Length: 515
Image (cartoon, rainbow, N blue to C red; front, side):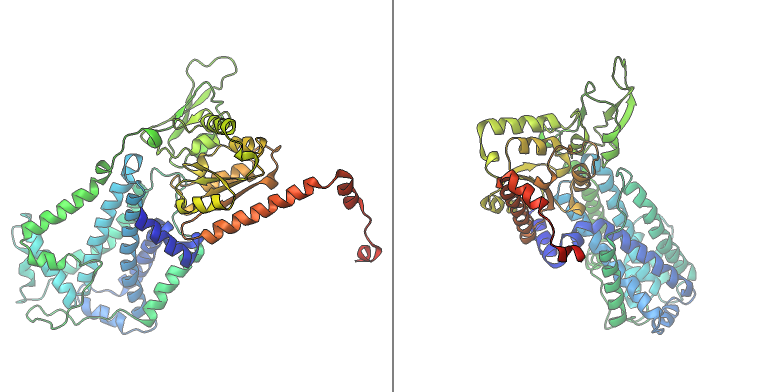
């Protein structure tokens, strides 16, 4: 986690938490896949399987469209590998690769494999000396698998031209695999409610614009045409799609296959290697059916579609006809449902609204700090390094697993206990482990979404802000502004009522009325 937090902090300092690309690697990857499909369709119009290198050369010779679109296609494919690898690293580091998230992880591993195969076919389609090297190395590995009766390497012997059917097969795979990957995203995202498919527009435009500018200013070169009977003095390399080439050429085919299959198997089985007991913070939510009113709010708020409404068995009296039911196989223990339940009848063990109020009441009984200092309720995953400095600046810090788990009654009880005010710090909205915690917290506090902060609570004494690694200045600025607001409220409260009424009713000068 420390390397990830350090990278997050560095990216936040550069781009701000709203447009931090590390928080949005998944949507960035989806955007790059779309860019690849669009540019690839343009290149497909001009590609000829009977003259592969010559058709690419004609594209390269066109400075208006062909050259930079080909380069954009190449750079976007490299950036896609980076985005996918960073996305996988982030999920693994944040323990989001097992349990209900296992399907997303395993489908992602398959999609990454499809991406590498598609990239391999793309390089071979160009049929320059680098593409020929990839084709020969791939044929060497393929021949080790007893599938075809004749060795594939024979077509690269150089005694005759490589048949057009070989390039047609590569073209078919190069087109079909990205389209299959786009369809595979449906499986990858199938357990998410309201998935975000694209990054924020400023970040999307910045990425596409930067890649386009790079393609125009520094277009990707075209290597010499493949010559199977000669050895080129210079062959391009690619660290993104051909990093395996030196090992594959140096090792026996069976050993290269073993290494590839073991690597894939370890990556695919990672959810089982990292599986954790469903206890403590990983306990799935449960429903107290006696408290459930059948309002249907928790199924709407659940970011993982883990809650459904089912007919209540043996309903009687004023009980609702339907009751919420949690599927533990889909629940990720984010606790967002606890914050959405007005009667506090759902949530993970020890994290329901009632549990939160019980802990707060116990704290109030043994301490009087709430009556002397404003409260900062912080998501414990947001920026742990900011907690101690906040306390030094006069905050009574309380930690919650997710801001979306916080029940608004905790805010109200804190103020009723004498706290001057309550500031709730969330993680960056695109980096929430509960996916939608900041979103639903804001709706409950300010827009009357069930379970809303009651109208009797003074909103001037409540605020929300984002706490992101690398943005201590933003965390402190929000706290300073909130503290000043509370100080102003305290000063106005000390002014005698007759003076306040006099200030309100004081007549306006005639010259100001004229304005």
